[in-house]
Length: 193
Image (cartoon, rainbow, N blue to C red; front, top):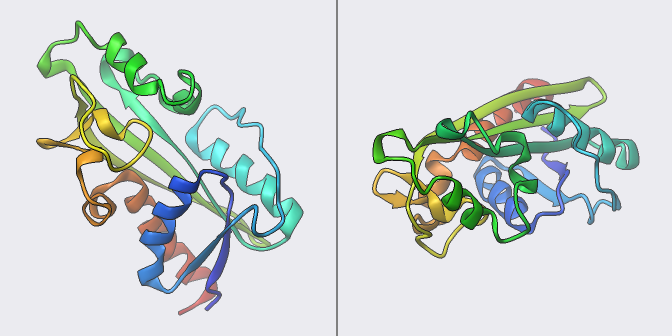
């Protein structure tokens, strides 16, 4: 079985998380930069899956090796699913949580439901195959915890925020973990093993 894949990302936190999820399965993940693809894809798709394919294609066209990519975000019911595919561009860097908390300040306890969604894609000479993972939770009232990144400090999973979970705990329940476990099954189907 082919055990090395290029990940279409420049986000070190996302790369670390995906490596942690796939390492026990015997899959090595190298960054697009390490593979020689210094490119920033124009994520202009209308869904998480379209954006993941766009990112994968941009890297694949340079490296010609199997590429995995994902696009993920947080969808808040009280905000009609926003920020959704615009999660990374919703607010200035490192101000995402504050903006979302501000928008949610008058939303009562029972209406703070949200989910993280992740679309993961494998792109190789056979084409693109996509899977999706999600994790249900709620939006908290303040930032909690020091682990994780992005919206993790305000995304409540039970009585803890994602940023209060250890990597091992988060990687058992997260949207990205679910998507990449499904992607692993696709990889096994394509490459054997």
